[in-house]
Length: 104
Image (cartoon, rainbow, N blue to C red; front, side):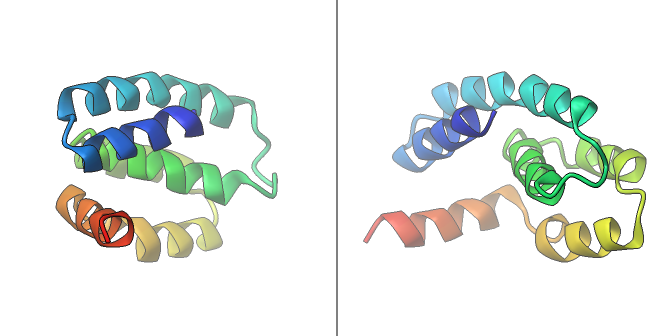
């Protein structure tokens, strides 16, 4: 899942938005399966939720992200962590950050 997301981000920053969308779409069901099989107290759960959230934002499905987080962020820590890190970002903001980092 993470490799497809990273590939999509690389393609997006490189200007290949069609391939990027395909990579994001390949990543999405893999993250869903991963979270379905992961225990709620798994140490990597927050990271997986963050990566899934980025993937959903990059697909332009922010409403889907909000719906997903309402269903899956059950604890106070989940809600605080996710809302401060991801929910305030748009696709353009994420891309701007990536372009600054990798287009030096």
